[in-house]
Length: 302
Image (tube, rainbow, N blue to C red; front, side, top):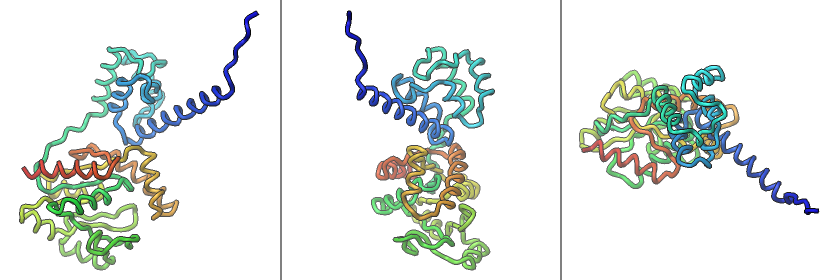
């Protein structure tokens, strides 16, 4: 009689842990799709490049319902239209299915088409806690040839911030005067609390001297600059993932729980507007992201 063989308990436990990690990783990809931190085309590319990857193991049904404004009913109609079985995984799609899905994605979520550098005025924006200030500070330190605009704000300084270097910290009366006298290129209320604005005079002076100017501002401000200066180059800074964005916001410890929740709600709205920009840069590493911004400044100066 043949001896029965069983899987050792330690192997079963390890397999269970790997399965849990895999589910968590897929859930993270779904969050990134829902919040638009990553494009569906990029997820599809990763899946097709490696069928055993986290993206490759996603069911096409889960992939579709993770996309903005697509529920179960619309998902099923899409699968019927594209003639893709609901049991398929992204990494297991056939050639025809890959092509029709990519065509559908490009129609529904058109890829960004940069206009190219047309101005020495660059605008860097992105969601809360993505690291705009850190990237801008790196550029200030390593690329003094680029004039970094200093914004005025009515919020209180955070630890380590210096008036006139990081921001001009002003009260509401002074901010009202700046608006009334037309001294701000753009201004907005951010996170339903403090006001921020960009003084116009230093920007005009730097541009007149032939320098490249970088504005680090929020989405509302970027829209105002685009309206006032249509030739400006708009750059949107993305986090590596939604989970990393949450981690950075919590980690800096400058907001209470209620304020963090408000900022994350705003971040979702800001991420949804990324296609209004000319270039997207992922801030996974500060020095690398800063170098990409500088490269764009060089292109704009030519």
